[in-house]
Structures are given as structure tokens and as C-alpha cells.
Image (tube, rainbow, N blue to C red; front, side, top):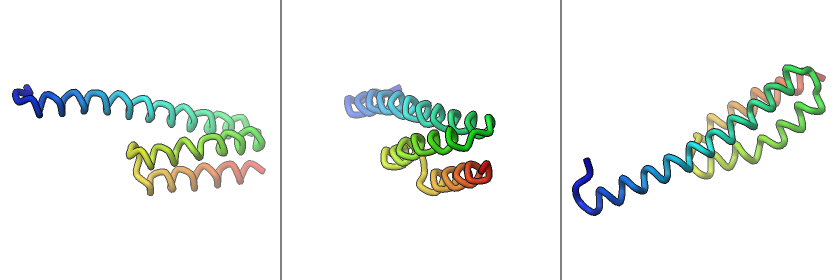
Length: 87
């Protein structure tokens, strides 16, 4: 348990940051799920639109420190190749 004022403040900051990052991760997963569903439906236009909508969210996750840059690059590459294969 935090005892010093500094450690109590850090505990509060960590809780707040955890909540923010959890919301960001959830939002990113929602966008990824929409792309997956569009790919599963077989509609290339819908899948491409969903992918374009997901790109900024993924990049925002990188800049905010929620996801690693290479992780997002790998996800984007795999998703875009799957969307391209629909055509």
C-alpha cells in the first residue's frame, strides 16, 4: 500500500492512466472487429472503408503509447493484404 504522499499520487495517476488506456484499447479493438466483420462478409468496398477508418485509430494508439509501432504496422499490413485479396 502507498504510504508517502508521492506514492499515493503515483497510485492515483496510474489508476487514471489505466482507465484511459483501457478505453483506447477497447476503441481500437472495436475498429479492428469492424474490419474483420467486413472481410468475413466478403464485401471489399465495406472492408476497405472499415480499414481506412481503423488506420487513424491504430496510429493514435501508437502515439499515445498503448500499442507498439511494429505491432500496428504488422496488423495494418495483414489486414490490408486480406482486404486486397477480396477483390
